[in-house]
Length: 514
Ligand code: KIV
Ligand code: ZN
Image 1 (tube, rainbow, N blue to C red):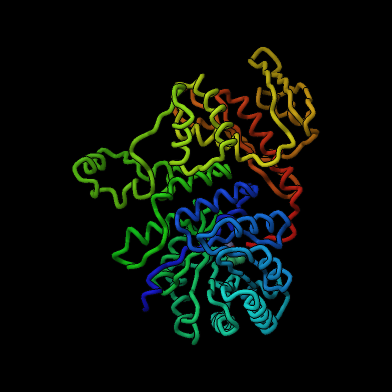
Image 2 (image 1 turned 45 degrees about the horizontal axis):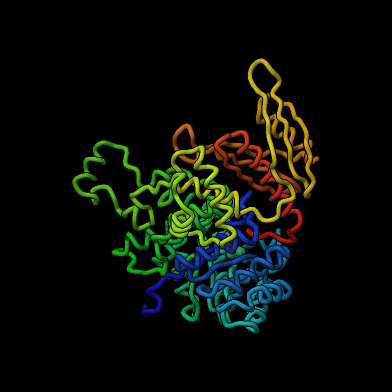
């Protein structure tokens, strides 16, 4: 194996496959913020989106391609000239653009979805790669549903697309069906049977339907794969994709076994995970490997005893190696603008002067009622002040009367397209009444998929963080709001979800992938 192959390339698809998680849609500013963070952490390739899917996706990929200079920027395209032209148009200004084109290779997809023969699909795959190569040498091809495809046909397709010019061939386990041993054998078979395989980097893209996405990706690496497609926190279609932090930390922690490097600066993992959670509102389960709240928490007395004596007794990697610091930073009402700016920078937020002013003003308001302001509070403020995009609806005022001897009533004032509107709503409880008032004001009635409230930090003076997921026209949006008063937080979250749905409905999606 030559030395160039001692590196595993990290292809991050948080902004494309990750964005396909229900409710995970991000606005262009949010996507750019994630892209900057991925660049900072050393990702090799960012898949920025699927430009033909919508005008919004196109614009966002283009913006990322123009701004991010330290990573290759990939755009997804079906094996179709129009798609590929649009993808190229979106990434053409990138420092290192890549076109990623795909078509299904399994008989199930050919028969029921594409309604084409193997010969036809093979021809289209090669034509697509050749067309993309007319624009750039950096072309990736994916035979979708590879793991359920006939092996000989898959080998034939991989060989043909490499001959047509593909420099990366990605083997997707599209429906998360593969078992590690079997997936490793598939990669080994490709290496054994495809004559020109060493002219391309072999990549894998694993879905997590059976909870095996990371295991499959690692087994593929053992058998020669040198690019892994993954997402932060493992978000993605259905059960998600291989989690970048898991793949990277497994390679790092078990270097003895793999002997391979990635370019990821692992100390940014925690920060990046938090940023994505903040932006999408999709929480990380507490026991999630590497980035879950409990990933480094030792509860058992025997374990704690061992750790005090020698850390390596129960710790296979340090919290510091993934960016979790031992000291908790606390700010308060005497903290100045400079201290806030510095802390935000350390947390990964590089704000403009104007953004910092808004965050600082909000911080002061919070610090007046809350003695200690933690990182989590600052993150919630940044989300409130910066991550909003266009706002059709704005929260102005809320008064709630509630209790067991009255009809819960909410009086609300909001701005709708710049006009002040006021209404009262009744409900079985205060939150029900608030949502009724908002529905009246906005003349909407979208199904509520989820409503939850969490404390941002500990303590009874903690800010409440509310999450609301609404559905409209087959798409859903997650809104969040934070405030020391959980009822205000709930109202803000509902309004935020409505604004996000507004934005989504303006960016009509023409196509989706898996
Ligand atoms: O899961 C899949 O097959 C995909 C392809 C577009 C690579 O996301
Ligand atoms: Zn996928």
